[in-house]
Length: 125
Image (cartoon, rainbow, N blue to C red; front, top):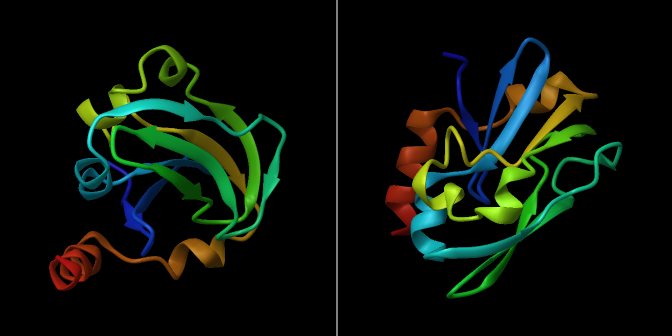
């Protein structure tokens, strides 16, 4: 299984065959509560690291999803439009949000490992 990395804004990312798959962490979906809709990025859209690329709406709040690395959107998870709750049910698998063709792999190296992320959320709880 490809290594998951995390951002301080609670996005996860893994690289599989040169493609970055992005979603939100289990901690993030727990904090948001039931997700009721998502505004997905458009394929072909280009984002810089840290730029808002999607918006999820939950029963509690509307939250920006930030690009964990720079690149071009090559695919989005269309299934989330009909079933946004997949993010709650399967944040690391069926609930992925977008796939990006990375433009700067060094950004990936700078993200948190699972161990560092677990320590980080332990500090903010």
